[in-house]
Length: 40
Image 1 (cartoon, rainbow, N blue to C red):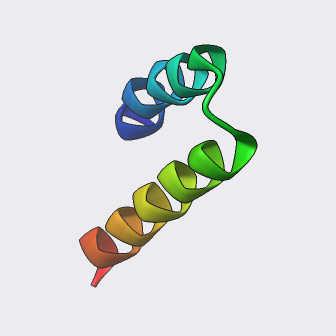
Image 2: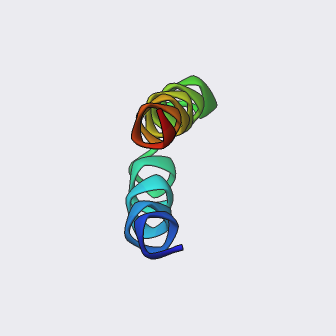
């Protein structure tokens, strides 16, 4: 949960920066992959 809380403001910052939704999506996917590797 801590990892999610740390990641959430980063996602908001990326979104607010006005890049694109794809950037946020890629960020989220890479975060999810990192979480998956933590479980292995």
